[in-house]
Image (cartoon, rainbow, N blue to C red; front, side, top):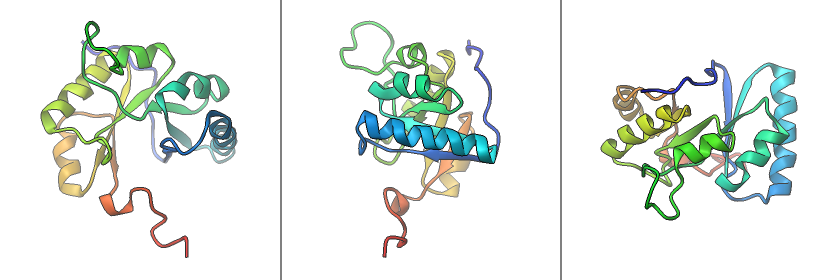
Length: 161
């Protein structure tokens, strides 16, 4: 049974993924700027925060949508070191990014992960590399699909010249 989600995100929205480039202090500076921009431009902002920073980010900027960068599909119990969706929800995460190119899941695991996220009350943002993959993943009923070709991940696409 799917837990009641807090709300939904509507377009337009902006997703920012700092990976693990920033320490907490620098991350919170970016979060403060993102919250101000969200309010100024009336656009939803999703930040995919490192798991240990989720609670601090949510406390600093409750207007932002805070998503975990990944999670495991283990159930509570003997799963040492696993990042469980229930734990993410308990620290204030609004959702989780699944199937990022740096943390890919096969379709069976992705389906389970979406269901586990929803059962914990989390939104599921699924990464897809192309339109065909996005179309296939849409059938798994994630809340959002982020279409991002592999060659654009972690780049400025030539803007850094």
